[in-house]
Image: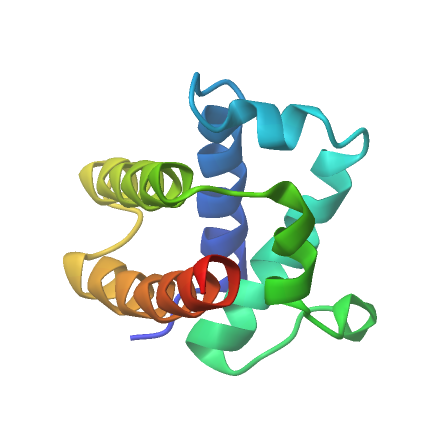
Length: 123
């Protein structure tokens, strides 16, 4: 039930197109001048989590927790990110780009990192 790298990249691109203009969390992404350059790195992170593969080794290391600490994300923003991400995948399902099983797999991985980030930031 692997997700292809092109699909992962598309999901990430479409998600951040939405997230960047979101009233609650968009400002986090708009303040980063070169944010669009991070999209392939984010896609590679998820490719590693979902498929155990890297598209580009120069994206290593992934330091997810430390990179997000300076953003001072609050719980509501973290929850909003997860909600928007899930909704974005629902759109991919409705376009027959991914299956519900693939979404469920990805959301399980999201929950792992959401929980780690919450513990790291809020405790």
